[in-house]
Image (cartoon, rainbow, N blue to C red; front, side, top):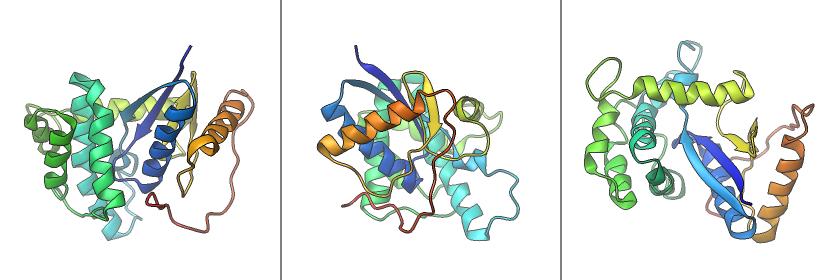
Length: 212
């Protein structure tokens, strides 16, 4: 029987992207049922006035891709994977991330929807918030809350759930390939399934790079 795996992602997060591509490698060497579900760094960082201005502007931009992912998750969840793969490849592998301000990812969203075979109208979700018609903000917040309920509020993205056991991470900076990816997955299953395991961490000495 396939092991169910759900990864909660924000498309703009480079750490989530590397983890997500690792899981795509795991699909090739382990019997898993992999799904992606949105969460939101913009929601996570709300009200944090101590953040640098550039980062706050980046969070403003991050609403768009996340809202569109939420709309897809609600109506055509089978297309979320392809949408994330398309927009993430451009943002992280092709160096078009780090955008700032509302609507900064509009062109990338449109291209990603087309690549995923999703209707172009989903892009409208990026510009509707609160109680506006077409807004999926409440749903995105609910997806975020679901991820946080599984692991606690003192973590970010990614959140990975394997066979009913969820944890933050693994945070990796390179993509394991082949059996190496499978071995890392096996280790994550072992640690994550132990009810009394909570944390394993060391200082990071490099930035994530999904191109190697």
